[in-house]
Image 1 (tube, helix red, strand yellow):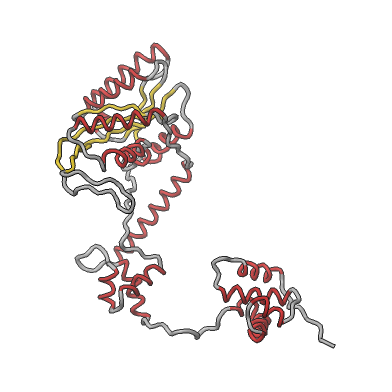
Image 2 (spheres, rainbow, N blue to C red):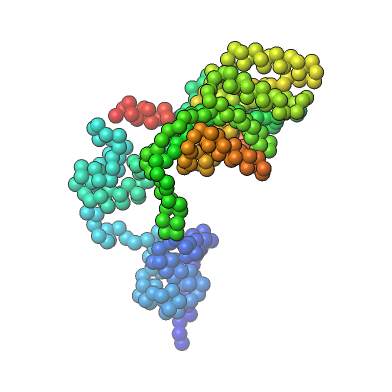
Length: 374
């Protein structure tokens, strides 16, 4: 008579762990086979049937079953000391990994080739170690932490307008895009073709600059604009008068702007006071209310996002024979945008943003301490 099959006992935790390994798409094939073998034996299959089901030999099923009985799920891992021995000495590995954060003398960073030459290994070895440890010396991300002593008060003032706009008000994100250059490529480029990228010459003729004044309505994304040859308080005041004339009466204009001196000029403040007095007498509320972002915090002004799109879609890759051509292209883009405006929605809560800024400050302070220690 054949002996009865004894199922392999499993705890609920062990079964969940084995099922997770067996069903994980990124798990190694050998790990899946071992986990499935143990699960099959726990379900009452014989060793021979388990071997056929999983794709292992019967001897392998016996081996991994025994290892599991002795050490649990940890016994299914390969024992140490097997496989090819590392060919890179530990001190060389440490030099490649740790040294990547310490630029060589008279250079800003290590390259894979320069590090390989200094460590006496191949470029591929350096790339493999850097990739495995998430080291990317060739990449740089820009940042700027505001040093404004009134940062939090100004932050909540601006974010409050985004998250809860006031009644009888129009929130406008205002700024200037100065020094927009009318550049004309010295030779015509080739358009995008199948299998070939678009081309343009590296040199160009300069025909002058223009400044774009823009105000984007936060609620609907419509853009009010004006172009000028210069960028002084006079042009900014002309733009404010334009906004005052185009906006309906009886509504307060809450303008979000940066701390550029033009926005705070004495004549600008005087005109705003005069306009507010008249509007207050007629409608009971101020006409223009200024809200200034903290210093070095242009990311809080959503019109900067529109300027980015304008730069990429029109200015950067265009070729303009005159300033007038550039102005016409800018105005055409804004008119097209206003036919179907889409606002840039502020989604993050104020607390989330402040927590992220605080983490950035702490990381910056830690990095500064590490640099000083070196």
